[in-house]
Amino acid sequence: AQSVTQLGSHVSVSEGALVLLRCNYSSSVPPYLFWYVQYPNQGLQLLLKYTSAATLVKGINGFEAEFKKSETSFHLTKPSAHMSDAAEYFCAVGKPGTASKLTFGTGTRLQVTL
Amino acid sequence: NAGVMQNPRHLVRRRGQEARLRCSPMKGHSHVYWYRQLPEEGLKFMVYLQKENIIDESGMPKERFSAEFPKEGPSILRIQQVVRGDSAAYFCASSPEGPQSLNEQFFGPGTRLTVL
Image (tube, each protein chain N blue to C red):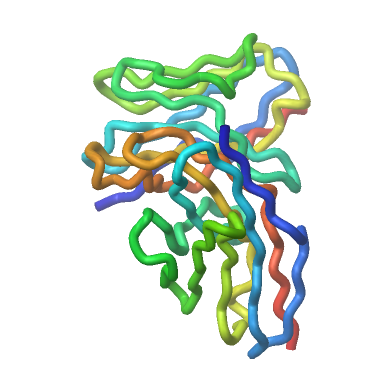
């Protein structure tokens, strides 16, 4: 079984500040991990994915995430927040090597203030 | 290359009516997934289909819900005798064939179902 925990349902940062969104996973097999972003009334857009290659993964819009097996974490970071980053962010876990369902966390709403 | 298409984008039904949600996967994708998002919650897996086959329906409610992905045409998620608790956003995702897919799923814009 797989599960994801996202700590902090709401995170607020100032424009230009560091963004850190936390994700911890549980998986009985080596996982594939994903971060998706959802803007209001829209679908999900893939930010980045970890698929057992490099542990530091770079994504779109300046986001990156680091896979830490010892901590079972896959936290999302961005050095400098922009107003356009305000959205809902979802961490998800999947199984490698085969098409199968993704298990999502409950999401973190990022607010960016001036 | 068009993305995942879903229609309708918004659907209003009265209690007891049927809701049909359609999903056309990306070109070349043969795997389709349906997820439900309740207000202020994350996405919950419902069902995974390949052409003409249901692969995993572990997230589907046992009654009133069904899904299909025929050889020709879009995937359909059907909800019979809708109740207010069915009000949610329903998202479809698709993924390509082969191990290189790396389980990456591409999401549609969703259908927002409101049951009056």
